[in-house]
Length: 112
Image 1 (spheres, one colour):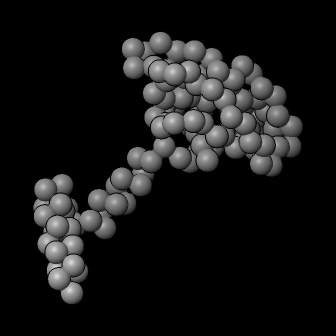
Image 2 (cartoon, rainbow, N blue to C red):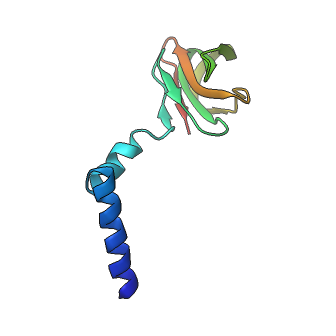
């Protein structure tokens, strides 16, 4: 029982320091996680190795950007046709901090 009281106290202290109830903060943080769909032309931060799921028909181009703003194409115009769960592991480079997809047709890309 002492552990539960100590945990509750720490939890309340952390919530007070961060400015809100833990449940609300969890929802805000989950939206910032580096997983999920890539929007056409929008930069998305990521952590670690990339695993992308491609679906649809069209072309997918993936660019990486480092902290200095240098952009490198890591997946040049890849044509996909009727893809349902095509998984690729592009290497963004050792210093990349974000990626961007350029999508045509019904093609989609998602960090999984």
